[in-house]
Structure formats: structure tokens, C-alpha cells
Length: 154
Image (tube, rainbow, N blue to C red; front, side, top):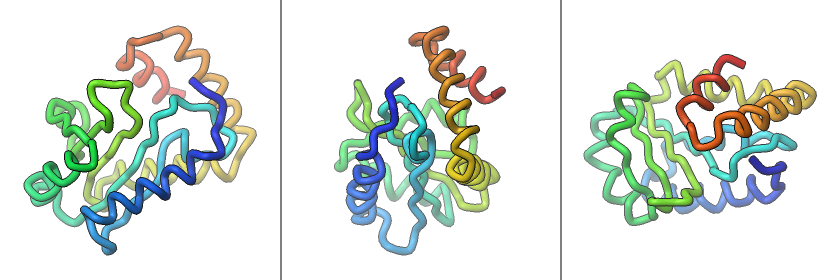
């Protein structure tokens, strides 16, 4: 975990421009996760959410172009994250970005953005959440699944 980096929004905008070459101007791209909330400590991995109209078509259309931008598609995450295509940038690591591709009608799309926006509007809650995440990161170390499951109960 790292303290908030004010360069994270700038880096998101730069990456968003690169992604636009693949997905075009019509699709929605959002910065989500802890790096999208000012003042919140986070793992220095940028989470990017891309909304599209058809997930099956996206799988056949975007895997290769995203690979040309340095993203690796992780198909085994489909069982863990149903209704989502998941990519990591800079595999085998340390990776720098997570790309979450889903239909905007997916309830997780709404939940991701509601949570982000709530933390943005309530910095005191964001600070408490960040403090708890730091404690969990210390407790779970490299056990990502344990960290993730426990974090989602906060």
C-alpha cells in the first residue's frame, strides 16, 4: 500500500487516451478503485472500467488490441468475476493496471461507481477505509484472495 499519489488521475487520463484507440469514443471508460479517490492510500495498480454493449463480442474484438497496449487477458478470472473480462498490464509483474471490461447494465458497473463516488464525497470515510485496507494488507501479505474477501466485508 502507498499513500495517495496526485499523479494517479493524470496517469489515468493518459491511459484512457491509449484505450480510446481500441474501444473508440462511444464506449464509457471510468477510473475506479482506490487510485481514483483523492487522498486514499492504495496499491499502485490503476483499476480501469470499460463499459460496452456486448461482452461476448468484446471478447472476440478486444483481446488482441489490448495485448498490443501491454494488457494480458486472464481468462481464469471469468469464473471469479462473472460477466467481466479481466486484463492486467505488465505481466508477469509487477503489473500496473487492471482493466475490467463489462456491460454497463451489469450491477457491478453501478456498484463500482457508486462506491467510488461515495468515497470521493466522504473523505473521512475514505480515510478510515484506507486505514483498514493498510491493516489488511499487512495481515494478508501476498494472499490476494484473503485480502480481497476481507476487504469486501468492510
